[in-house]
Image 1 (tube, rainbow, N blue to C red):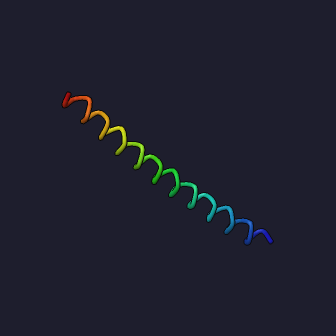
Image 2 (cartoon, rainbow, N blue to C red):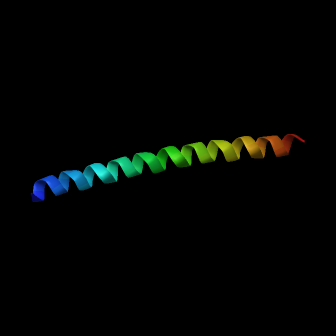
Image 3 (cartoon, one colour):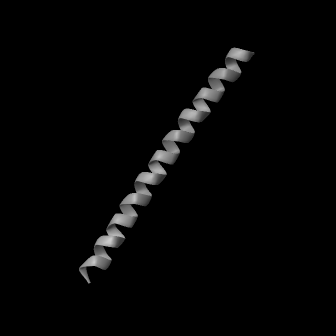
Length: 41
């Protein structure tokens, strides 16, 4: 039982980190595009 919980916990942390990484990547790209647009005008 403990091993299953441990594996589930690790999987949850990995999935969470991947989701956060993807979110920050999209957010930084969006901000970069916006700052480029405002700098051009």
